[in-house]
Each structure stands twice: as structure tokens, then as C-alpha cells.
Amino acid sequence: MPELLEYKCPACGGAINFDSSIQKMKCPYCETEFEMETLKALDECLNDDFTDEMVWETQGGTEWNEDETAHINSYICKSCAGEIVADENTAATSCPFCDNPVVMTGKLSGALRPDYVIPFKLDKKAAKEGLMKHLKGKILLPKIFKDENRIEEIKGIYVPFWLFNADADANIRYRATKVRYWSDSNYNYTETRHYLIMRSGSIGYERVPVDGSKKIPDDLLESIEPYNFDDAVDFQTAYLAGYLADKYDVKAVDCVDRANRRIRHSTEKIFASTVRGYTTVTPEKTSIRLRNSITKYALYPVWILNTVWNNKRYTFAMNGQTGKFVGDLPLDKAAYWKWFAGLTAVFSIITFLITLLIYRF
Image: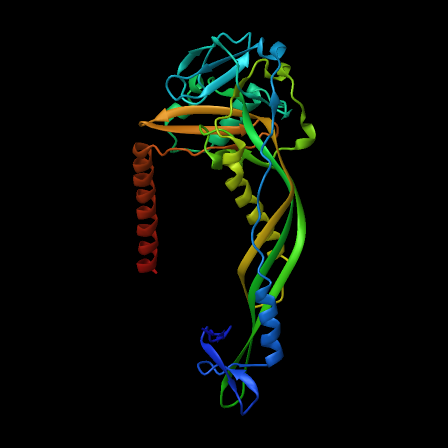
């Protein structure tokens, strides 16, 4: 059965028809007119229907050799199920995620060996200074967060990251308008022109990071980015000396969606920056196809402090390379109400004095 071809008005979305009196397509709702050649070009553009193809080779990392694993111990925390890895000289420590005391007894096995590591550039002293700077001036902060004993528990840990490399070919279609206003002695006029805009191009992405740990919030680790990969070196177990390492518990294949979202967001942002000179711009469709997509496995340095306040866990993180520090802070409600009461009293006195001066003069 033949189908009835219907055109939609880009201005209002209504169905448009051919008007024989003007030999053009015309919308009966908003009275916008369209040249036939314009609609033909629109047809051709819309028929070029690109689809996403964001597939990855996710075989990052290599196998450990026996000489390396002989000098590495591991332990699975019975409290949070996190697997902690350290050099053979670390006998006892506490879990960097939940502070549960642990003893390093097992040998590392069945894990992929990282391809790269970015060594720590900032020591524990710098991490403690970064935390104190982060806490400075927070008058409503509970005292426990300024307790030196808690600050001493900050730990250096290598966090597992999957690094995604690819060339992205993208096609993005936008709807845009240009609006012009003018008036005469009788009327105010508004002219709106509608445009269909196409952008196509390729962008190379190198080492898009997605953390491979469930135990540290993704937004926390993204907040201490970026890392400078110029400092990265081929992995050696010697870099673990004096630090802990988190064994990945999220496989590369399970990180693909997050990597694709980051690539899509960055691509759309870059392409949108080239669409200028319009009153409004609305993305209509995006398609991305990846080429040369590979994944690598790396360890990035992070200083971590976990503490508990009113049965809620707070995690702070510092980039062990750049010193960028992040972490949410709780509010001491008792201190807040004292501060609020004092502030209210000050404003009441100021208001009284202003009123007194007004009535006096």
C-alpha cells in the first residue's frame, strides 16, 4: 500500500502542503513558505542517516610474571570486599576505603599487570597540607575533621584506570534560527529564519580515563583530573614500594559506556563551538563512529582519607601528581545554629540603629 509523504514545518512542526497559487510549500498554521529546492535539499540531508558505532578492543594490561608476584601481597577486606595490593614489606595496614585493619597475607594472582603507572610526585606531608588548606576557613566544620589523629590516616594509593584511545568520526545535525526585530509607526515585526546545519569531522582521543574501582566514587576521581601523562612510565613493581594499590574490580568492557559518554560529550561540545551567529541552536542528531579503538590499563596516584561523621562516610581525594584536592564536607548543626543566632543578633542591632537614625533625622 503506498504511503502518503508528509513534510513537517521546521518552524512550528505542523504539516505543510504545496500551494499552487505561489508555487511553494506553505504551512497553514504559521504561514511560513518554503522553496521546493530547499525541501529537496532537506530530504537529501535527512536521508543521510548515520548511526553510532562505538565499539572497543578491551584487552588492556598484560600478564604478571612469577618474579613480580613473588614480591607482592594482597588482601581482600572482609568489611568492604575491596582488594588491596602492596609490596612484600607491607605486613599490616588498614583498608583505604573503610579503615578496617588488615594483614597482608595472600599472594597476588589472576590479575592483569598494568601497562603504565604515573608515580607519586607529592608525599604524605603535601597531602596533609592539602587537606588542611581544604579545611581552612570552614568555621562550621565538625572538630573531628581537624583532628590530627584522623589526618594521619591519609593514605597513598594507586587507583586503577582504563585508558581509552580512539579516532572518532562524527556527524552532528542542528536546527538553528536567526531572529530579527523591527517596527514602524503601526506594527512591531519579528522575522525568524530557520536553518538546518550539518557538521562532520574527526577528532582523535588519547587516554580517556575511566576508573576501574567501584569503591571510589567516579565523580570524586573525575574531579581531581587531569593527570599529565608525560610523567607516565612503563609499569614496574618498584613503584608500589611504600604505597597501596587498588586492584581493579570493574573490567574494561564494563567501562565502555562511561568512556563513550565522555567522548560523546566532548565531541558535541567541540562541534557546537563551531556553530556561531545564530539566535538559537538545538542539536537534533549525533552519530559517532570509532576507529583504531584500543584500551590500556594504568595506575594513577591518589591520596585518600576516609572518615565517618554521624554514621555517614566522607571521602577526600588528592591528585598525587598535581595536588588538586576535593571532598565534600559535613555541617556541624550545633555550630551552625550558634553562628546563625549570632548573625541574626548582629543584623537586628544594625536594623535597630538604622531605624533609630531614620526617625531621629
